Image (cartoon, rainbow, N blue to C red):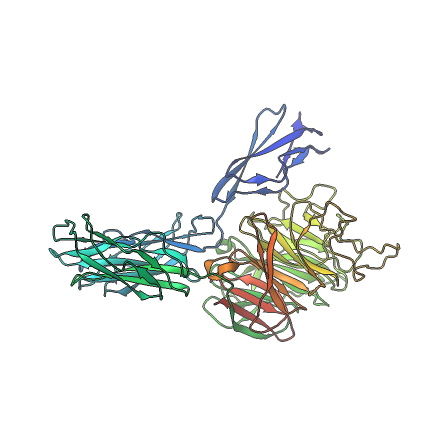
Length: 629
């Protein structure tokens, strides 16, 4: 965040500006900064807190008439958690609608609500029915509420499920009662979660009442596991003075998924509890080949309405429209140049897709009538029939290009809503440390091509966020907002690096003997801490470069021990690595994945269904869906 200090309309240099997060519990890179000759001081990176909503940063300077308040809006991460928001355990007379309409809540990993998701409700047991629509959309609190649930005609257990693709479903139980008869209902302990083979924190309990709703003491109740393979202790107990009977312990089974516990008492209708067992350990990956015989697929992205759009390095932008399984040509720009490692590379989807329908690509371009080629970021608007584009705008041009080597080329929208871009060194020795070149950098622009606050100050080019890279082809954002590059190195190493604003990645392939030769294959390490002692330290260095490429953070309980980990694609080594990080962002473990089939992994993206999608790099490349098992 950058602010300007002026006196009588003129910039004030040497003034100290203090930056303080006042709403949202975020933090800034620099709590105090001094203005330069232009009167501008920067807080560096402003990391928002973990809660959705407005965050405020206050800037103060001695002698200023009033503090300056700066606001930003934090949006939720991908949906990964579910719970029952209302109507979890009820009873109602048969053939009537339950008093509390069941509601499912969906949140991200920080418990922020996720709005706008279409949840489906399905009757599982009891022959009841849904009154009105069987789907509901999550509101601003992340809650989707069924229109109504009418119980079946027979006294006893009724079950209803709420589900959204890729995340755990939620089940609701209700007891249908006959008028004037004794009834057993769930008292507490329904709809819990715990790790596999672990006990639940709340012991399930039932309550038995007579026809006038008075508690019945001394009634024998038996609890038995009916699904999931778990165990119980004190399986048969008597109701107490309040009519409540509680199982000793319900320990879930050894397999992830739904567990069910049934309570019975004489001739009364049974009731059931459900619980979800969460898997632990590393998953295995089931591979499904979605598309094949593709000429060098490079990157892929998903639109909120269900389309997959992917690039081929040779120049195509292709699309699998919503609800379809085959791909078709969306667009091939006339000026695209495919040479060596360059061509049509990264792709990103506009965060406001529903209103804009914009896509962004990183491509090598030689405009008609010119002999000069550069790398550039271009925006297109996709038409409604998925067979063409309009409104081309070249947002950022003049990115270094030399024969197609080392172009970088990954595009991703960050949690700040801005477009982040990785670029390579083109095998030119002086580009990485040259802050006037757009090569060997991480760039950051708005989605209209403007310069956001927080990039490097002058004399660096204004779109530069960090510099000194070799060939970063991976870019990913952790749930806390931290940005990481995954960088294809020389024969010495590959690196994963956590970025800081203005940071130097430490790559300098200049010949120490003074020639103009590119010194990038002579044992030069990517982060030269001897030359640049303040350079960004790599989070992980993979010795003896295997060709690091695309990467993405995994999110969701379906990934078990990999939830929150960084998946890194490897080209030459034909594998994926899983990096688990601690809260500070330092690496805990790095593990190679046993892939169903080895291949050069060019791109990794987690899809809206929570599964991992990979593009493999070859003349007969493929796009895979990798499902955790």
